[in-house]
Image (cartoon, rainbow, N blue to C red; front, side, top):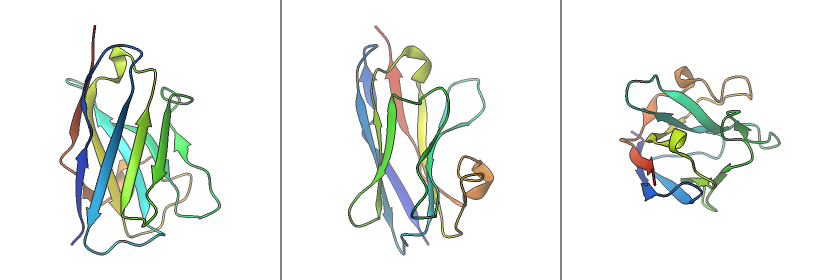
Length: 128
């Protein structure tokens, strides 16, 4: 059974940066569907970024984070990162990584229903 553990959250001022990590234990494969989601208090969970299973496909980002966030994988494929820059208070949320053995396309990578495995989350707070 795959398990995911996020880290790297914290409190930063507007304009600051954070790097989130998600380490997967158990069997992982380079063709896994992988993504980051977030949920702010009182709001629904929303997609942030995802890596489609196709090795040639580019990462997909929510419009709200394009140009500020970067999703990437570690060299061994079991770690997923989210580099966040120019953070603003609207980015305050619990951030979750998600992963699934079933491949996903660009059309599905930002859909929560594409994922069976989720981490416990790491809190990101942006305030002055």
